Length: 233
Image 1 (cartoon, helix red, strand yellow):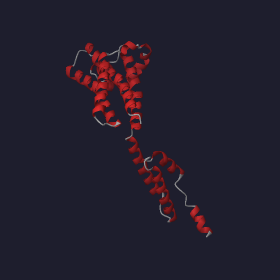
Image 2 (tube, rainbow, N blue to C red):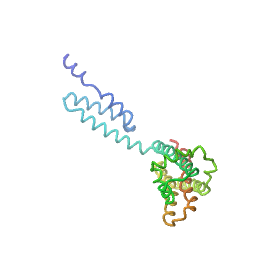
Image 3 (cartoon, rainbow, N blue to C red):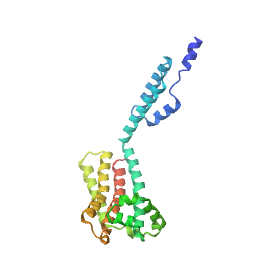
Image 4 (tube, helix red, strand yellow):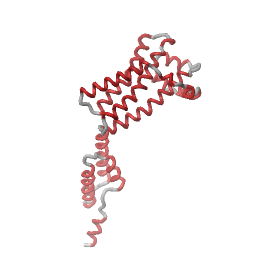
């Protein structure tokens, strides 16, 4: 009798790490039931001297994956991703505008990329970041540099389109996020396509470049305001 009780005491619940991960990453809709079922089967497997480590790892990984898929469909996840987009995009645009405003004798490579409208290639060019940092563009940039009527108009157009989209459709936060993302990237795509097709003189690409970068700059904050205002939960 004593040996039997001692044997049962050795059959513990889930390991602490597994329990901690499941309590935070499993699907909240049935998290408690899932942990309870796993604990029961885990103890039964221990009692029957069956393999438990691989089985528990596979079950935990599947539960965590399912939980993360469920979380990715929530409004909270969309808001987090949107905030990250804002944190990454807006300072990058400000830094780029500062570099443009204070650009002095850029290298032939950077100049050619700029003339071709390939801002995406410039941002992934280490020479650009070194040049922008050395020229201290942010310290000499004024608010007037960011005044761009087409960009502001585009943001207002997005606000109106968002109102129609949300009022005429029963869209969730993910669908609205995709809708907003299209509005954010379209100015850049339009500008790049126009420069590639028309091949304007270098002196005339300034307004197009400004629209390409400043339209998203104004649109992203409008998107965040509408997102947090419409989808409160």
